[in-house]
Length: 316
Image (tube, rainbow, N blue to C red; front, side, top):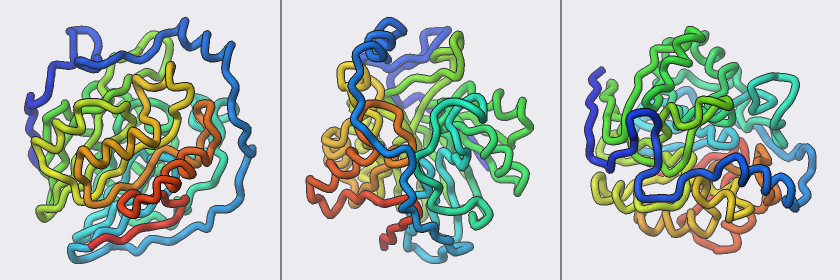
């Protein structure tokens, strides 16, 4: 296991807090209040019982890539005998407490007990819908999987006896047995409470395995980083791009892409295939829970897939 810390991307730390270089920053508290006072959310069902859970194979050998959408930004990537899990959440709520907060609208597409052995867990940032401590504790109790996190996040995991945890900065890499994880920029923000805003980093990841690139964008707005990533690493075989939590645009555009922007990002990356993530399970903003998927499908792009929880795509 070998780690490197590069500086190939623009400066993004001012000595106290991280920020999005050359891009709008996340809206502040007064803007949040304005949104709450003026919002007109699109109606959505409280719960949608249409998930057909699947059971992934223990391993996928050879060069074929099997990608299973578990829910939200939780994706199981299987290729060359390796299993990688992104931003895992199996909890009922994305919240600091189990009895209140953001509640799931669909169940996970893979039951936790049917999850195969995991060789690496990627965490993109510390928001509750991406870093779910109850799920991470369950994963850590099962096996000794490494957790790869952005700068500043390992302290939280270690305080919960979750590990081993490896921190990466933008441009940094971690060489594991058989594949390499590269940490790349995202345009977002971090916080788990009132006073820790942007004290830890946010990121995406590129997984390099047998000359095949998989890009997990994490949570991100549209920005120049997509072109930077393609220039540095080349076009990904597969891109996992967020498509939800974008409305209203005046408030969300600095931190979340809309579906049309995800299509633009796909084209800039020149990804062979993209899969939409960050949709269909939690209703974080004003668009309907299935509106992002419906919009992507309306573009009729065979190279941009929308999976339901539990569905998988196989690419050669």
